Image (tube, rainbow, N blue to C red; front, top):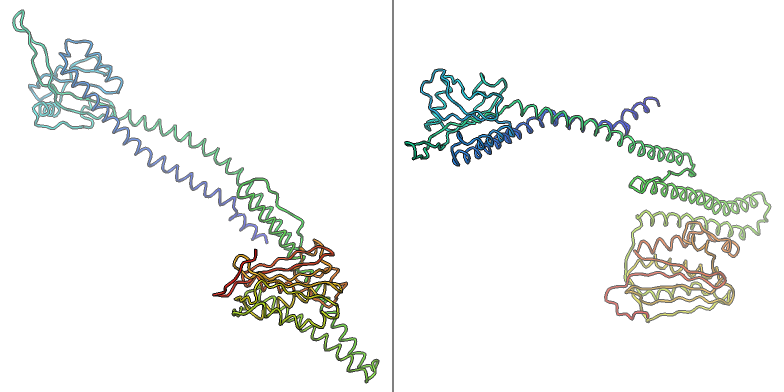
Amino acid sequence: MPQDKTRRGIFSVRVKLLGIYMLVVLAILIVILVVFPRVFERYMMERSQTDLLTTRQIIQETLEETDFQTNLYLRDRLDAVARAKGIEIWICKEKVQSPSGISIPTLRLGGSTDSQDIVLSSTNAALIENIRSGVAQESLYQDLFPDYFSQKTITMAYSTPYYEQTTLGEVISMRKQSTAVVLLNIAVSDISDSVQTTLHTILIVFVVLSILIAATIALVSNHMIDSIHQMQEVASAVTHGDFSKKVEVLTNDELGELADTFNLMVDELQEVDETQRAFISNISHDFRSPLTSIRGFVQAMLEDVIPPDQHKKYLQVVFDETNRLSKLANDLLLLNKMQSGTEELQITRFDINEMIVSLTLSFEQRIEEKHLQMQFHFLQDKLFVSADMDKIQRVIYNLVDNAIKFTRPGDTITIETSIVNKKAFIAVSDTGIGMDEESLRHIFERFHKGDKSRGINKSGMGLGLAIVKQIIVNHGEEIHVSSKEGKGTTFDFTLPLANQVSFVEKK
């Protein structure tokens, strides 16, 4: 037993929920730490390239507008743009005469130094001149000037025409077009810092949200598990025959619906248990009574308490009791077969009116003894139905037999057939003693016998009407009963009409 509890603890719902949550958290954490930096860094790189292109466009418009060297406003404008986007702008307008470490005038904007001259290595000088002359294509370069920048940089290098104002003599001035090489430098470390800062922020938010979600899941799981434990306790009590416990319904969600259904199941199990107990009690009574009679009479004859000349009389009683036991056993077997679906129906086409008239002839003696009036109300002379003739004959027999039992001398029994909603409608009514509401609710249950039934006829076993209902249900039809105390009872049921039947609907 302790091993079972340990195993249940390892594989409990709470542990499973915690495990699933930890796996989800771990997966999200891996995405944040591995995937996010790469994606965000790529995004920042693309954004930096966009900033470089935007700055290039602004520079191009400025250089085409006027001589930027003499217009301080335009230079300040470019410097502001460079600082806002974290870009250092180098504009090299003079040609490099020597490729070996020459210092050339350069306009530097957005940088941290006021110097306007840069010293180019032979490699850089050659590259700039190739870009100016168009030999080298404009492109992006990484760490092109390690002597000037202490951090990694990306440089966009390209050539662009610009205009400068020149003077001829004292009066004439003109615009001269020249070619400059523009170097746009942006620090890669700024991108990395942005990635790290953003990553730290996301991790902090993620940790806070994880704790809140974990607390929420703990509350919800505890509520769910408490309900499950309640159901487990109630189920354990039911297995020991205690149906008094119920699961508390605290919510209106699916868990609440499950609790409602569970409580309903317990109620139905209790009803089944009570029915089973009543079944055992009733069947024990119905078997014990004839067996007691049989034993008593046989013992009396064996002990010569009953004279030999009266043996035949009492043997007839014993024979009748054995028939009663045989009928009870057969009825039980039939009812079980029909309820389990193993009893197949033999569907045929027959006239229900003719069968009713023929069947009631077998009750002629009992009807005359009680001075009952028998009436037939047939909407049409012949009414053909499609059903199991033997089973329906048993239905009519049981209903008429039941009506005769519960009528008083001089009462009336009426059998009616008609067509309602394209189905054969059959009703058996009597003007007998009727039933109370309690008996009416249980009339089709096995072994149900009202006190009035036992008072009038103690030979009934309480299976007849249960068999009647099951036969009608197996035909896919319905049977109903209505009754009033002192005024009589009516049973009515439907059957499918046979094919090619001409009929008149009952109005």
